[in-house]
Image 1 (cartoon, helix red, strand yellow):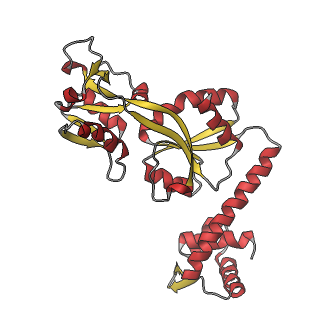
Image 2 (spheres, helix red, strand yellow):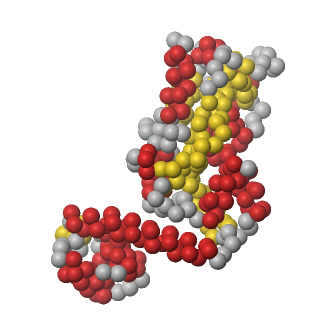
Image 3 (cartoon, helix red, strand yellow):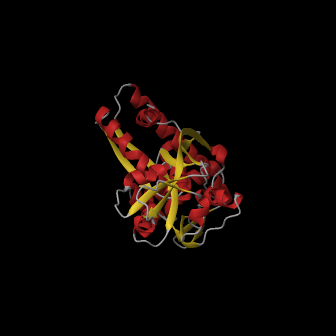
Length: 296
């Protein structure tokens, strides 16, 4: 069995049907059916259960799929590595970022683009679980994320480059602050105000970190909304609906006269940040240089 046959097999496994797989591979259906039959004869196992036109992987087929994916990834990354030995920094760099880390990317991308103009970016926003899946599927190389990184895969699966920690700040509607010079508030003062929290059904790390600080002081703010994105949270604060506590860097993206940013007088707690990638993946030259720029 060769790499070409493995690509055929993976296309069939992904599509669940010979016809669709042949279309994806830009080939006729009969030759693809013959290749599948040859593979099963060579291996001495049945790779798919046939249910009409639909194909479902057998236990042997699923085992081959997992190993074939690993082999194909290693093969593709080896080709990229060899090609880069004789090339400059170029190509497409795919980067993901959780919603609260988007603001970290623009200054680094700007400096990177000035130094390596032959590289184009493909950017993906999402929560830890979506980005973890994209990373696993090799659709992105790096993730800018709050730490610890949570996904459906084991933490030992990832390498992490820690970046400088990000202090938490409170954002409040200007109309709620009668003193324009006020630049800090205590957690007790904040706990008296309607609270907006950044949280989804599966990503609760930041929410838990913030409410742990309130809990240590016996405080329990009244949550009036759980928000799935930074933009929603900031918009609600700007509308005078509630307050929020966010990492300071998040507010670099927003310049709203209706929002006031204040430090938290009695709690110096930080949000940990880092770049995340698969341990077993060869990173492209572009990705390695991009990581270096975060440390400059």
